[in-house]
Amino acid sequence: MKKALSELNRLLTEVHPLVLTLAVLATVGMNLLANKSIDTGLSWLALDCGILFSWLAFLSMDVATHCYGPRAATAMSLVALALNLVMVAVFFVASRVPGVWGESFVEGSEQVINGALDNTFGGTWFVILGSSIAYAVSAVLNNFLNWAIGERLGDNQGFGSFALRSYVSTFLAQFVDNITFALLVSRTFFGWTLLQCVTCAITGAVLELVFEVFFSPVGYRISRTLTAAPASQAV
Image 1 (tube, rainbow, N blue to C red):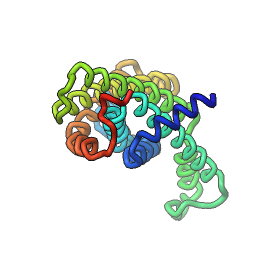
Image 2: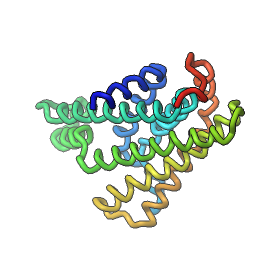
Image 3: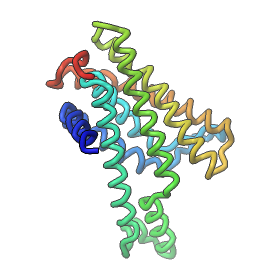
Image 4: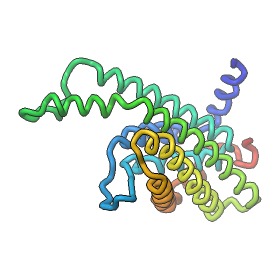
């Protein structure tokens, strides 16, 4: 255990604080906003507002993998996940603290609204567990797939290489993230059909890819300006 913690600490020291901060922010934000669904107007398409942050989590992983290698990027992802669980615990405690939320002051509905806000921030154990498992699995897949593609591309480390690595790894990892969560949580606890699970996973991955395409130039510029060892030396 001591050796593992020492290795984790070594890997984390390689990651620029900005990248780590963005990863933590994105992980906390996407899990909190996942409580709000998006009304798409289509019965077979289910999305949530977590998508507004999840692209940033994967872009942070892509930058970290590009600069420091898949092991450091995975260590960063797992630390971000652990800190998210800490925030989940804080939110849970806040939801149990006696008092009222500012938005609950609606005459005649104070108790209902206050209870709903407490439940939103308090979270549900199976949602938290399912999202944590899905995120951990997809993070490992994203980081090592991104690195493997980079290895095949060789010395070509321009924007085209960064984009190809990011687009392929993000789409596949996001699909795995979405389908894992859908099968563990949505199908088991909310009665989703298999079609809904697969459709949600695919469409969610496509939308995540759109965000990735739009913001990948920013991620590439960040990776270019980081004072880090070349990606070929980070293992």
